[in-house]
Amino acid sequence: MRAYNFSAGPAALPTEVLQQAQAELLDFKDTGMSVMEMSHRGGVFMEVAREAERDFRELLNVPANYKVLFLQGGGKGEFSLVPLNLLRGKSRADYVNTGLWSSGAIKEAGKYCEAATIASSDDKKFTYVPPQDAWKPNKDAAFRHICTNETVHGVEYFWTPEIDDDVPLVADMSSHILSRPMDVSKYGCIYAGAQKNIGPSGLTIVIVREDLLGHAHPLTPSVFDYTQQAANDWMLNTPPTFAVYLAGLTFKWLKAQGGLSAIETKNIAKAKLLYDCIDNSGGFYRNEVAVENRSRMNVPFFLRDESLNAKFLETSLAANLAGLKGHKAIGGMRASVYNAISFEAVEALTQFMREFQQRNG
Image 1 (cartoon, rainbow, N blue to C red):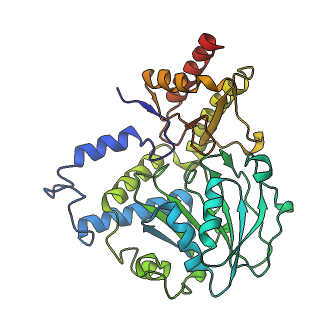
Image 2: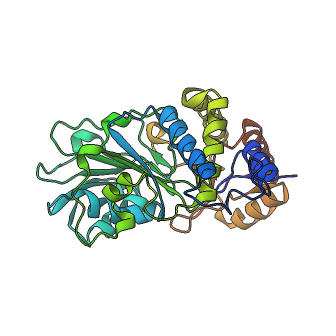
Image 3: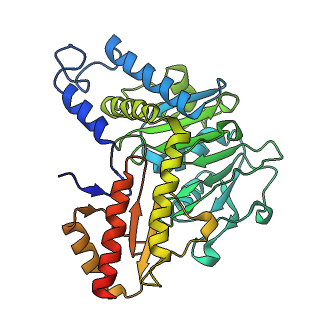
């Protein structure tokens, strides 16, 4: 029996995707070889790549004046690549700090420019999103960066900042991309590591508006230069072909679910079930994030008696519930309920949580 996998990433993939990949592993489309063995420039794989990009664009309704790049380096790699590509000769960029990943982006960008923190929620241990009227933006910034879902702290933006100047908005959407519709046209650049809602680790997707291309720092490595990759249909170097193939299968799975509006409805139901269990536990479990900013994808929670943490993890694993240990930065527990996590899996988790409370409360 497959485990109910609540890992934050690499995370669960849809069972149907894994089954199709298994069936095609040794002989892809009657070629007599696996998709991971064939040339990335051959006709068979080129069609895989084109379909993956087409389906991704369709799911997110990506406007025609944006390039979609399937790259490598992960979300953390983009912490450097965003300033290298988008500073455009300027010396400052704006950052809103809402948690561990925002903090990492700020630290990395500081190697290349003045990374100005224009708002932060560290005053309340990163448990909310600072409202835009509290931001102190710089008109001369090259871009304005946010992390729209903090995987560790479980904080999510459910609104898009309104930019009233010419400073492009950049977003790290690694842990909630494709979980609901997004208005791509509000952003200058979006990036996301694949290992949450897209596919296996090793693939990073960048969506960048065309007018921002052409200004990369001269020392930017060619394979990480958005302009060069866009000019070469993101195949300046060998892409992570198997990860692209699996991402493509995931996109088709999402379309078969009814697209992003349909998957959002399912994600809302799953998140409500889990948060209701926490909130109705009489304090045995708690989530400290402001209700209006609670992530649908990543749900950190804590036991009132932390001496029970090890027992909770041990018995949950025995109950076929995997990946529930919280991030070392904040401790506790964390359930990541990405697209591939079924409602049945969340039901199993909440039932276990209630039974654990009855035995240990």
